[in-house]
Amino acid sequence: MFPLLGRVVARDRSSYTYLESSTRAFESPQRVANLLSALGFHDIGWTGKFFGTNVILWATKP
Image (cartoon, rainbow, N blue to C red; front, side, top):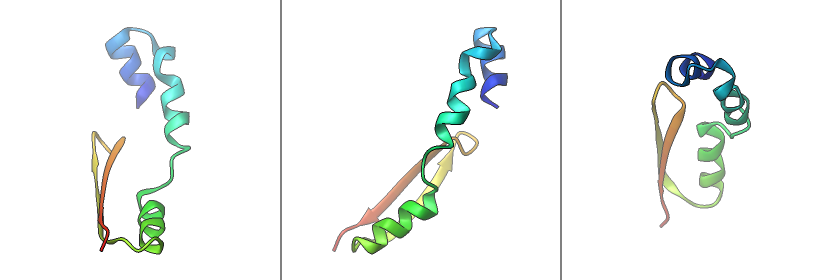
């Protein structure tokens, strides 16, 4: 998706190719939720934005 965005926005397909590989290095929302739970947080949730390229996570510490 990012290379397509780069081609459309910047008119250069290679401009955004690094983004796809760099975002794959992030932990999944479920993995982060599990870590937060192990640290004592509760009311943990998340929502995806921008076709799943961004995630907003939240949690409550008692």
